[in-house]
Image (cartoon, rainbow, N blue to C red; front, side, top):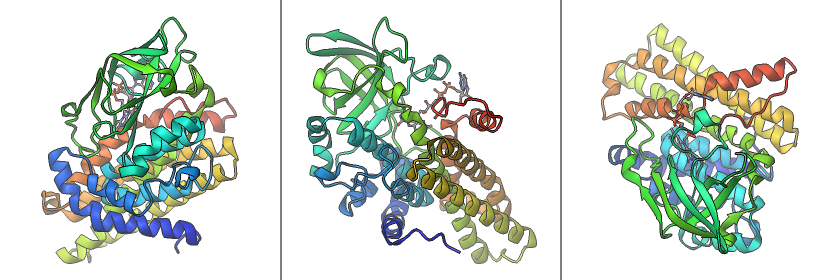
Length: 389
Ligand SMILES: Cc1cc2nc3c(=O)[nH]c(=O)nc-3n(C[C@H](O)[C@H](O)[C@H](O)COP(=O)(O)OP(=O)(O)OC[C@H]3O[C@@H](n4cnc5c(N)ncnc54)[C@H](O)[C@@H]3O)c2cc1C
């Protein structure tokens, strides 16, 4: 039985599915080969109004998502459907949507007018780069990239990495530290326009095994001046807001979609190959279907908890949904290979790309940390769901 989403969410899911099958799937292999962005998908999403699903209402968007908790499932359905065809395209949309949600809720009207203008004008996308070499070990708010106060703003120096969308980004959120301040207190978010002086985007850096089309460059900040009007809120705002808890479900939806994509592939492939009669294959398909359905229920339920503003429960459930979706997608890689056989791994088929994408994308989260937080919560201990992304 399908989960009853209601007419609005059904329509969003249906529109995203059309883009995923009609556009995304057709270009995925080429972008994977070329390490190039899924520009056709982003353009198709703009044409049907989904690229602005989390942009401010007063500018023409739908203003939904995980920050204001208005219809959070909407954009997650788009992530899920895109990931079913191509996880890279889904991640480009996800980063853009998360950034839109952050800015719709926390930027001033004047800032939104400027930062969202390229999006409404020509589909200009947004990026958000927190990543830095060695950040995991230092702690997620401990940036080596620095912002030194100067005249009416700050001068930035440093190296960022993993900036999904930044090679195309019209505006780019970048995180830096203020000197001589504790990491969380001095943590600053700035917005950098595409052609800013001192902003170098090195897309050649992005040569991963999988997720090749979600081009996530290295960014070099060199004496880059950012005026006060391009600072989001102020120092310490992001750690204090605990917004890091809001992004787990995006990753859950992405792995859910990828798992469904593997199942779609196997169900299509086995009968064509004449091997659907194998009892072991039938058992595997049955178990895969069950786990994908369970993952979907968890993701949708977590979104409902957020919408009901049951925050603590929503945080814990989102971690569970993420852990379950990622481990399901990873488990399904092996199950799928066992039943389809080696010919399906040739480049003519999408399976090869899908497996590499899941492997690389799952490294975003340290699943042991995720499980530990869930365990702490179950044991009645304090847990901080912003600790890992
Ligand atoms: C496809 C893709 C897209 C991405 N897009 C973005 C983006 O748009 N914006 C962005 O900011 N970032 C993005 N990232 C980066 C991501 O959020 C992580 O910062 C990055 O994957 C960390 O990789 P690393 O090699 O630097 O890990 P390392 O820092 O080398 O850590 C490797 C491993 O060490 C272990 N570990 C060591 N110390 C600790 C500790 N103290 N706590 C927890 N674990 C520890 C963990 O198992 C961890 O996985 C993206 C990553 C991928 C793969």
